[in-house]
Length: 448
Image 1: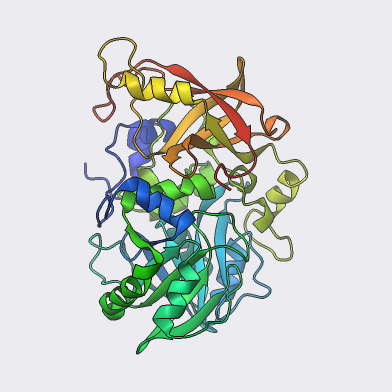
Image 2 (image 1 turned 30 degrees about the vertical axis):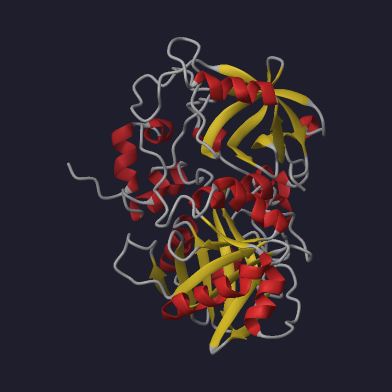
């Protein structure tokens, strides 16, 4: 039987957790080099000079136009759209009726009647489905990840990050540029090119003094833009960043990619019947030391990933009533866990030996999308979902969601590292033994 929908795949698996626990290969590779120079210098550059990341290919883009565009966004997102419009941006966040996260993406106001949401396919899928079943008067243009769909990309997209970013832009522009507020957009020229920019950051602490800019323009102008930025950045120590450094930046910024979408309840069956069997929603893996038969144990609230401040009750939206209750007393919040250096060295060193003492191998510099228990003694206090290392942190750290009452700076916890079955039956994970890694909680990014 050839499966065509996510619902059919779910029925074949028997349960959401069994479906998502099926062994699968690592995340899809990025369509550009792992490194351009070396990982450490590329990581260091976003703190000391500047780094340029290519974002042109690995994300999906959904363009939305039509008279109901803002209404569609407002009625499906926790965010307020009271002041949204041309040259405004926001981190769009959609939840289900119970207040659990479905997906997110960066939303750009390109004009009064056109927006684009950029990121994974999950939020665009939800928007297209809602428009179809609710009859919103909108039109869509979808650019898939490069190489994964027949539609060519409309825009090139680069991230320029670091303390010298603005100096590089002004040199490329040939003069002073007006400051762009955090998560606002601006436009300027580089030679004959018109370039648009969003002020945000990947490797730093968000705010108006953030040192990151997302730069984009027509795809055909990408090579000319790249050459101009690299030439302008030479005297300021600009480095190109590869996929390894790009992914590791999230350890410092705290962005949590690809939470399991809360779409597996009975009320979501029509949506699963609408989704393809081969969509992103069905390959987000459940791995790590935490295992539960209840899929809701893997669901995410806005507060779990640091998005609680985005929730605004100035409009009606899917999940509002549930979030009004959650907001009274969030159960968990986002924190960082700073690893004990001796335990990190022990885990890495064990990869070079055979036998019962080998710990689960660490993907360097970043192990993404895991579900690992965070313990205070024998008490479960949270889950760690991403682990990584950067030279700016100076060690290993995890992004985690822990109980609000346990989210205390300096508190000592342990991460249970390794799968319960030691990787048996999973060809993509070497056999190993579970171990514990000591860590301390921090409510601020480790390199801030």
